[in-house]
Each structure stands twice: as C-alpha cells, then as structure tokens.
Length: 522
Image (tube, rainbow, N blue to C red):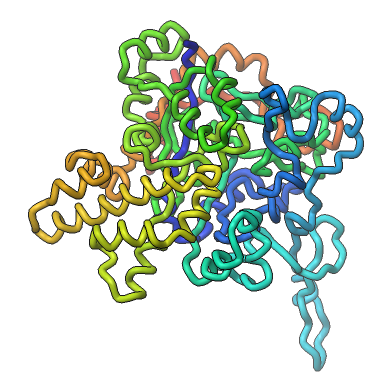
C-alpha cells in the first residue's frame, strides 16, 4: 500500500441554478488575458446538450482518454508514442475554434466617434482573434436552458445510446445544469499524452498542472483529455488548464468557483488513496465495474492501518485529520451518493457529482401527485426510466442500478426530513428502506442542505517546509509573463517569487479595515 493524498470536489446538481457565477469569477481570476479569450476553465452546461466544446464526449471522433487493448492493457485512444511522433506537426484530432466559439467584442468606438447623421450607428461584432467583422453563430452556453433544443438537442452524444422514443419523451421530461472543471484524474491521459513532459500531477495533493516553461505547444494534451479541459493559448503557444486554484488551496481557502457559488453546491476535501492500485482499477474489463474499482482505491482515513501507512509515506498529521473530516469522502464513500463523470474514459476522475432528484419530483407534481411522498418517489424513479438512463450515461457508464440507488437515498432523505419539519414522528422504515439508519439520514441532510462553510470546505494548508524547498527553483508564474511562442519566462523580467501566506494571515488581511492592522511574517 502506498498512500497518497488527492484534493477532490463534489457537486450537488440539485442545487445548481445555472447562474454561471462560477464561470464568470473563474474567467476573471484565470483567463482574462489575451490568447485565452475562448477559454473557460469552469463552464456550466445544460443537459441534454452538446457541451463545451461541442460534442466533446464523442471519443470516436476526438480520441480522448484510455482504452484496453486485446491483452487488457491500457492504451491511449489517440495512439502511442510512434503514432504521436508521426502526427506531432499535424494533429488531426483537435477541436477547431468553431467547436469552441470564435470570441468577439463589439466596435464600440463607432458608437462614440460616428459623425452626426440621420442613421443610427451600430456596434458590429469583431473577432478577438482576427480583428475582422464576424457573424456570431455559437458560444460557450449557446444552448443554455435548452435554447434551440429542436435543432441542437439531438446532437448530444449521449442520446445516441437511447431509443427514439426516449429522445422524444426526454425533451419533455427534464433538464438540469452540469458545472464542469478539470477532473484532476488519478490516471490522467493528458499527462500521458504530453511529448515534452510539461503536464504533471502534483505529488502532495494530486492537482494536475502545466509547466509553462516546459510546454512546447504540441497540443497532444488537448486530444488526450476526454473532457477537453486543456486549452491552447494562441498568443503564448502554451497549454493551459484549470489549476484548482492551488494558490488559494495552499492558504486554506476554497477555489474561486466554490467561494462564489450561489447555490453552495460544491464541497472540497481530501481523499486518501492507494497509488499502487490505480493501474489495476483502470484496467477493469467491464466498464460497469470501473466506478466500484475506483471507490476501492479510496482509503478509510479513520482506519488505524491507513493512518500508519499515511504517516509512513510522509503525509502530515493535519492532512490525515483533514481527510477524516473530508465532506467529499463522506459523500462518495460513506453515504455513497456521489458519482464520477464518465468513468468509462478510465482516467479515474476526482470531481464527483450528486445526480439531481428534482426532475423526478417535478414530473410527479405536474401529474398532481405528492412530490414528497416516499411511495410516490420510489415508484416514479422505477417508472421514469428516461432521466435515469441519461444520468447513467453520464455517471456510471450506462449502468442504471447505481443511479437508482442514489436517487432512492435522496428521495428517502427528502421524505424523512419532511416528517420532522412538519412536527411529525420520524419514520425509521424510510431510512431502513435504503439501507441507512435515521441518524445517517439526518447527518446526510445536514451536509447536503445546511452545512456551514467549514463543513463544506475542509482544506489543509500547505506546509512551509514542503514549499520552501521549491521556492529557489521556481522563478514565478509563467502565465503572468507575456512571452511570445517559444520564449521562456525565466529571466530578469520574470515575476519575483513570494512565500505562501498562512490561512490566518490571509483571513486577517481580508478582514482588516486598515493596513496597520495586518501583521506580516516576522
């Protein structure tokens, strides 16, 4: 057993209202520079829909993720080293700018400087890439709220596995929002695809990053990522991706998308996992067994043997305690209501989702039934196969039963807690019907519904002794350096490295009314 720590995230999709606040704040924090105008590290998709970039889940076309060869070994869908060498200067499996969208602005100067006349001046859309006039045809959330569903809805790659009857009824059944960031996988195919070794997975917390100095712009990582969460900066010639806001995590603060989420649907915490079993879990033959294999990797942080092994492998004591209080471990492994996104890609994604129950409830209410009654809910889940099948295509490689079990637990929690809120005696049989105890139902409700800030985000701070060893080697963040393609950010003009703040200092700085109230490091 080789114990390692992984920072993970869980999103409760029932609480997402599709406001895109997380996308906008992430954009302002990370991708508000030239060259990445089209880039959204965080985006919110309406399902059913094509996603961003369009039809990114069609791996027959994009060749992302892993597959098993005839001998049961893991192989990249896009091919091995020899194939990459043959296509290194012309990668055919890359999304075009049309698959994302051509970013634009408007000729506002024309509105200001136009001479007086009888006609009204207009602000024509102009491309941020070419500077020429353009016609707006697509964007990151073009099909938001099922906009244009008759034309765009059937193009959802997941609907190809469902029948025509299901497609027709699905459009009338429900929709939901799916926020997406980089999955920071345990078995990242983007890292394996990079010819220059610029993509790497941090040993201390599992966050996948890009070394901007090492990147040569081959874009094999874009092809290798099945979620298409690696982007190419056309100004610097470098790859960029979601960093999980690691400077904030190191200070004990949540990611920007989590901090600003209106629905409070995100949870952050640590997983402990057995690194020696990742390859075996990713090579499970049956795709329906991949999720269970991934959960078997995740270790119980309260197990004395795991604690001893973690200390032996250099994991600090406070990180072990953080893993014991981790909300993501509780949701994924204790309550078993969080599911990974597309486990069939075999990347072992570490951003998990709680599937939405609301479509089932809405369908009951529309037919005049009580949407909170446990009998009605259980019956609706069993009868309403359409959303369950679609959710299974998203989270369980098409296996309906795990999704069914999660929805039944959420339905039981809803019905059990209603009795309590109405002043009635709680019914233990509701909890027992889903294999839980009443106390577990109540604790799960508190975590999902009324959890406080410190309960949703359990983030251990970085250790100074770990970080200090690297400070002399790192000249700064190359993303902040306006270099041309092929140029290095290392030099006299490079940013000066700064020491990582402690959480207490950061909190004090944010809450201070005067600069004199802030005590800097001695």
